[in-house]
Length: 227
Image (cartoon, rainbow, N blue to C red; front, side, top):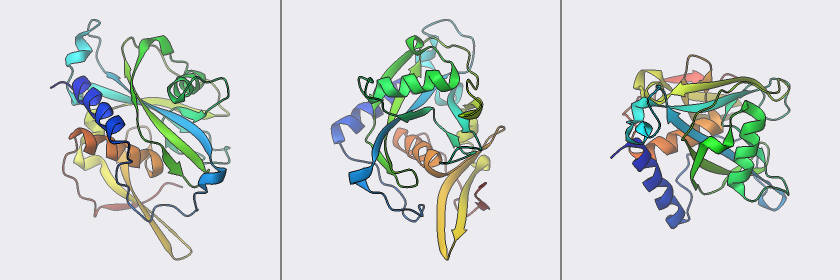
């Protein structure tokens, strides 16, 4: 099967199950209040790295792809300077979570939403630090467009990281935060542009596990989280 087929099948299976994938405990320092939470969506966007003709990407392997990320501005009150998937709060005018994720991604990175196929919306996940209920939206880049940091007040960098790098065991770590006697551990990915850790790294880790793409890596290799 191709990477595209893997993604479509996994997104479909997650929709049918209606349950969240398992998540490691002990990574948050805040309590999630479901009654007061706000809805948000993020776009997990995959596309082929090369310049092949249209349609060729449908047969691409996982290592032929990359994923789009943003580095949040250091001046933001929530998750400053951290790597994230493009996304944000759902507005009243958004038709659904997918529409919100595409709108936010366009505002943050300048991408053309007409060139993106939505493969599915994954189960929502509570994010205690900012008290958002976040829906990951899985997207496929059918017609790629240039990306850049549109608003420096929101994002200081936009980059695409090869999936081959993210799957490479030599670039995987466990990020650790110690605070007031409490220890938080999450997966971490070392990229050429930044360290992906925390909530985004957990979603990425679960994506690769669910797709069966994960290569065995040493979770005992720990590093301080880049706060």
